[in-house]
Image (tube, rainbow, N blue to C red; front, top):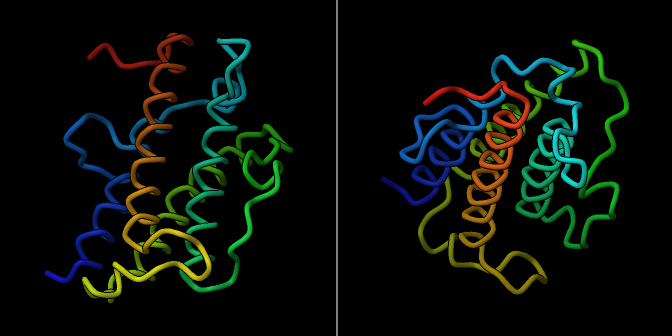
Length: 159
């Protein structure tokens, strides 16, 4: 199996599962209400909604970097996009967008060979492989934060 196919599958599984460590990001977001997503059960922490937007942002930034469309650091607002609306429709769109952002990134990299995975990303000082593993690790890390916030809200699973 080509390196790109393996990583593409892992990027998709980060959202859709199955993951060996526990629930995938999509599973964690399933059943979260807009009110829960916008809540701050831990005052200093980001909300589930903000964290989800942040994971989307980095999947999209990675995709743009893979395409050579940007190498610059994101602005603070790009890194942590503000929640502009908290309706049920807005939350449903965010949940779908997290799936779409990872799905599109995975589709873009399926064809990459092992050699291409070792190439540097434009002017940045890391490889394609590092970038893509970073997306997986980043989304998984923030999934853990979402799981903890759900527990703090009383919305977490009992397992």
